[in-house]
Image (cartoon, rainbow, N blue to C red):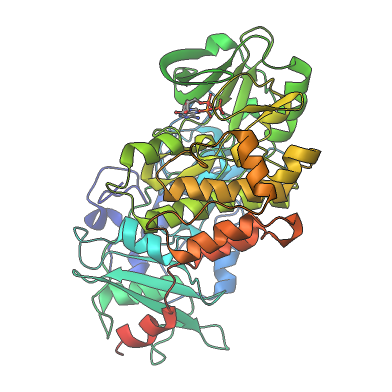
Length: 526
Ligand code: ATP
């Protein structure tokens, strides 16, 4: 993406001269108007795809544009002959799907190209035309810390900016901008009449107009707004393709096993390619490691669990042995390995808190679905590009016949990861979201110690005995007191007294949060 115009025309022309003069909203609008040809007479052209006045449009007017027209947020390369490839910024008309059960894939038509191609598109790659989500500078859930760390660091051009939801004031937005030396954050506030401003003397009917204005005039801002930050973190489409949403069982000949990534106690994990187009991870299960009917029952539930911080289960090959489980591929493997490889070289407390926050977010989703993981540990968190961490292997321990392995020791007639499992789950088989919370405390310990074995030197039985007497692992060296307190909260004897994942998630999100309003009132002079 970068400096190329993939927002509007999809060609590799320099961004500014091509079609999106950074100083003129009316020129931008006229470009879009030029490019749209509505082929379906039933669909009326959006009402204001005409050159408009440079200043803002009324919000109500904007909403009316969104109905069937969408803007691509990222590039998408078709994975099957039924899909539609598109470039970020391309305009698409959704023909079918928005309101059907296939909410992950919509049937759409590309309006930008001369060929008028149609096909399925992943619905999480597009946003309604003229909505704030469709703007290249809008990063809804981005945290202030991530804005600074991942997008606006020295090296990017002065004026690089983004707009995100304010963390401290729900409903408000924040503008983060790099002035060449450091990042400044401004609160975008609203008047009672609905207009937006960073300085009360100049108000706007919508945020787009505000951005266009500050691209033209510095007017008190630390720097004139330049290029929006690049959207690096591309989401995963829902499932492999439109078809595999329903056809869960796929032909194993559509898979190529390319490189062995690792082995677990249930089999090997391979990097593979589906349909010659899509990189995937393929878990090959040792014959006899699970009952097929148990697995398919669980898989039905697992495939419905969708969250950006959970590994997506894409498909299965379960008709013959070895059973394959096909999931999203994570480039950096398990968190345990990742932490051990680093050993404190480059991963510091800020990133550790970020890891904890992301895992807590995925687990908060499972909690909201009343789904118990049962095997939360650093070995079951996977690391992707751009510091993305996702929870894997949820629900699998319930159906897998666990064999020998360091982490798993026999309890009654089962093998369990004793050092990660809550006492009430070990003793009375009481697995719950609260026993997952206990495991999360141990995972936090692994994060802080760069993947050390918990309760090192003790057997599972010894650990259980000591825990019963009130023993808890001591604070690891260099572990901030606040993090250790969270571990202790997770290890409270009474499950009810342990926090929820939702609470933990907010605790981690706010961990480094300074008072945002301090910046808002001090950085802006205007
Ligand atoms: P256990 O079997 O005890 O759960 P494990 O989680 O390490 O241990 P597997 O889930 O079989 O075992 O994974 C083995 C290794 O394969 C992992 O440590 C990781 O490095 C790699 N791996 C697993 N899933 C993926 C994936 N989706 N993407 C990339 N690498 C993966």
